[in-house]
Length: 299
Image (cartoon, rainbow, N blue to C red; front, side, top):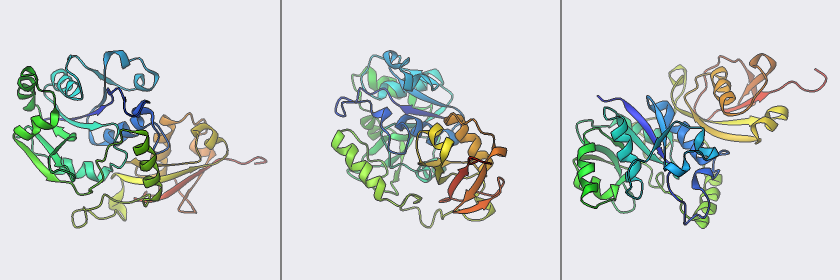
C-alpha cells in the first residue's frame, strides 16, 4: 500500500470571504494550523498547498509546503503538484475551510481506503456527488488527472465522477460543510458554540464508540484545554479545544509547547483532569478537560 501523505489546500484567494480563510479562528487558532494538526497524526508527512506568491506569507511560511507548479486554476493545481512531486505516495487531501471535520471522520475514510482505485472519497450529503477536498487520492490517479487537465477541464469533482473511485456515505451530514462568506463564518462560529464540544462524528455508532480505559491511549481524541495566569498569556487564550493523539498529560503538554511559547517545565506545573488533580502519566480519554496549573505568587 502506498504511504499516505497529507495535503492541506490553502492556495485559494478567499474572494467571497474578503479575508484569508486560512487565518480564521473557529477553534482558538488559525484554521490552517488546526487543519494541519488534524491531518498530521494520520499521515507519514503533511504539507500545505500554496501558490508561489503565498509561500512567504507569515501564516503559510511556518509549514512544509507544496508550491503549485501548474497554471490551472483552483485546487486541482495543488493536487496535481503533490502527485507529481511525490509520485509514490497517496494523498489525504483536505480543504482548510472545513471547521466541522473530526478525527473520527478521517479515521473512517482511511479505514475504508481502496488503494487499487484512483481515490476514496465521501459522497456529499447535499447532492450525492463525490467530495474531492476530503478524499484520498492514490498514485494511480496522476496520469488520468494530467490528461483531464490537458483536455481543458479543471474541476476535481468532475474528475472523480468519471474515475474509478470508492464512494463512501458521509457519516455526519454537516462535517464537510465549507465556509466561504462572512455570513457563513458567523453562522459556523455560532453553531460550533452550541455543539457538544467533545462529540464523536455522527453516524459512526456501531463502528466506533467513545474510547474508554487503557485502549484509548494514543488514539485520536478531542480535549478541552484551559489555561490560567502565565500560561493564558503565553497561549493567547483562556481555553481551546483540540484533536490530539497524545496519550497522557505529559505528551499533551509537550505537543502544546510546540504550538505556544510555554516557558515552564512540567515539573513546575500541576495537572488536573476533569476538575481533579491527576498524574502526568494518566491515560487521557476522549472528552477530558485538562488544566495545567502554574505556580501562584507566594509559592
